[in-house]
Amino acid sequence: MSGVIINLYEAKTSLSRLVDRAAKGEEIIIAKAGMPLAKLGPLRAGMKKRKPGGWEGQVQIADDFDEPLPADILAAFTGEET
Image (cartoon, rainbow, N blue to C red; front, side):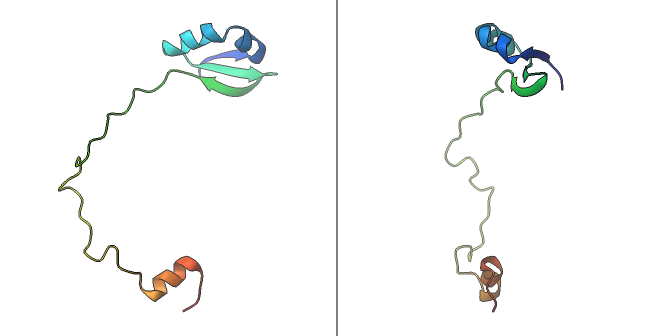
């Protein structure tokens, strides 16, 4: 486990300062009675926005994709005997 360890009381009294440190990339471990409980760190970079059609032409779906399953396969999913 990496990062600086801060006890819970100190974390409660200096949360704003700890958040500033975490936002700069530091990992803060919050502990109670020496036992690590939580980790405070920077957020990962946001995901790119998705756009409709981004996978167009790259995914193939079988013609029978939405057909009912054969009885033996359906029974295996439901736990029934055929």
